[in-house]
Structure formats: C-alpha cells, structure tokens
Image 1 (cartoon, rainbow, N blue to C red):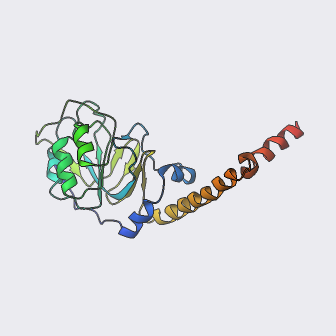
Image 2 (image 1 turned 135 degrees about the horizontal axis):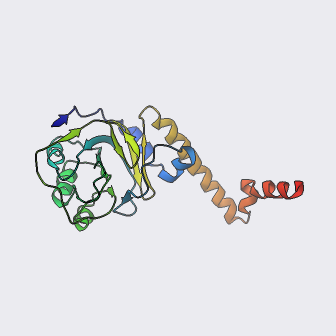
Image 3 (image 1 turned 90 degrees about the vertical axis):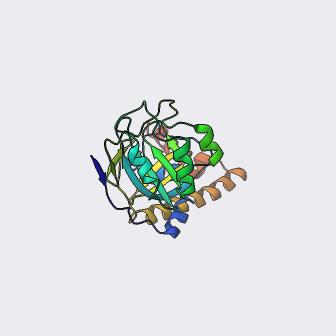
Length: 222
C-alpha cells in the first residue's frame, strides 16, 4: 500500500542561508547526534547545501512513489530516502536527477546506492548516497510512504526537518533548534580564522589551545 502525507512546511530562506554558512564538521564540534552514517557520501565534491527534508520510504525494487514525488517537490526541498536496508537497487538515476533538478530540489540523500553518476555531474545535482549500483528499481506499484519519519544512516528524519549537507557528511536538525546551532557554528568558524592568523604570526597551536599547559601540568604532577 501507499501512504501519501502532505508536503511539510518549508524552513525559512534566511535560516537556509545561515545553515549554508556552516560546515557540517563544525557542527560536529557542537553536537554528537543528528549525523547520518558517514558512508553516505557526496557524489559531487565541494557542495554545501541546506533545505527542508521531504522524506520517502521505498523498500526493495519499487520506485513508483519516487516518480510520483517529482510532481510535488518544491525549490528548496531535500529529498531524503530510506531504502529499508536495500543496498542492491539504485532508486535514483538520470531521469530522476533531471526531474528533481528541474523542480528546484536542493539535494538528494539516499540510504542506498544511486546510478548514472555522470548525469548527476552533468546536471550538477547535489547527491549523497552509499555509492553506485547498475541495478535499478522498477515501477512495480506495490508500496511506499511519503512524508513519514524515516531512518536514514541511523538517523531519524522527519518531514520538515532542516538538512545540511557538505563534503564531510549530512546533519539533520529540528527547525526550532537550527538557528542556535548555526549561530554557534558560525561563531566557531570566525574564531578559527583568528586562530589561523595567530598561527601564521608564529604562535604554536598547543599554546593557543591550552594543550601544552595541560600536558605539562600532568607531567609535573607525575
């Protein structure tokens, strides 16, 4: 059977802009949860995008609901797909890439493989997945669920969540929590610029970070 729920409210454009200033790895200094399995990796290098999670669960070889979704996605959506452990069938290929790009979709995040990577590169469609597979899904018309909570890379993603993706990985945030996380990450990145200038001026990292004092205090106490 198919479950089709309404499209989620999109997160505000100004929040998207703030999130896209943040490196996922910087948020890794702030949080320990919300990150998908690092084996879900970027196909295109150098991309950092944020948007609203539109969630999809499509088990086994049936991609009917993914085709259906292409008529309803909006600019700014990130399509997040649970594959229920199927590591064999690629649900996302060249036609889906083009349809999603034409609709303004920001990115795809798949807990499974994709295919037609050359088309993903040609169209410049940001994509995170578990790698390529030549074996594709089919239009079987069996089942799937749209805009339900899904599990992608060990992370629960709900429709309407904020998703940030870059070359370091993917992090999922609740929209109410995302502004504070973004502000803290941006402040850390600005502080890092100052730190790098101090290193360039000749200071040593353990003196700036306090690591030298910690180690030498332990050595003295021993």
